[in-house]
Length: 274
Image (cartoon, rainbow, N blue to C red):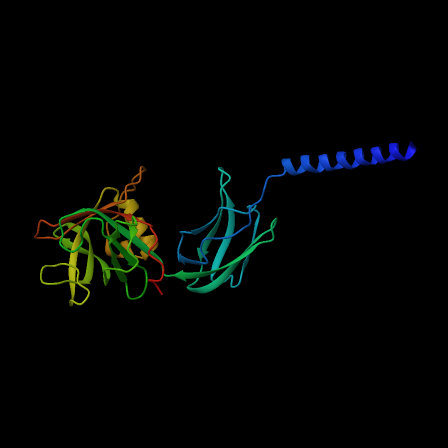
C-alpha cells in the first residue's frame, strides 16, 4: 500500500515538473537561426553608411572587424525594433567583418570593400539625345573624375549591372558679364547623332547648372565630390532653409536641350568601382 502511494506521488511530482517546463518553453519566444542573404558589401568613403539588415536570429549581435583602419561598424536598433549594422568607410581597401549571434552562437563573415566616394544624378525628364529620362549618372570622387552612365532594367525595376558608358566630368564656372554660372562638363563617347556609344570617340559637353535650392545642392556636391565652390565662385551664396530640394537642371547653351533631375546618394551597382 505504501509502495503504491509512493509511486503515485513520484509520478505526480514528475508530471508537475514536466508541466512547469512546458509552461516555461511556451513563454520563451522561438529564436530562428542567424544568417545573412549576402556575404559581400561595398561602402563608399565619406559620410554615408551602408546597412547590413538583421532579419533573423536574436538580434543580439557582436562584431569583429579584421582591419579597423578600413571600416567602422556599429549595431543599431531603431525605434521600430529593427536591427541593422551600419558600415562606414574610413580608407579604401578590403577587409572582413564577422557577425556573431550571442544567443544562437551562429556566425557569418562578410567581405567589405571600401570604394571612392560618389554622388548620383537621376534624370527625371529630358529631351537630350544622350542624357535621356530615367538615366542614372554617377560622379566619382577620384583623381580621374570618372563618371558612369546607367540605364534601368524595367523588368527587374533596378539599374542594369553594367554601365551603358563611362566618361569623365569637371565642374567649372563661366562668367558672362556680371553673371557667374556653374557648369558641369561631361566627357563621354557619343555617335554622330549625339547618343551614348561605347565604341565612339570621347567628346566634351558643357551643361549650365541651375538649382531650386542652390545652397543645399552645392553643399552636397562639395561634401561628396570635394568641389571647392569658394574658389570657383567668389560671391557669397545665401543660405536657404528646408524643405530640401535637390533638383538640378542642366541646359546646353545655344540649344533647346534641357535636362531635369535630382542629386541622390543611391548606391552604384557592386563591382564597378575599384
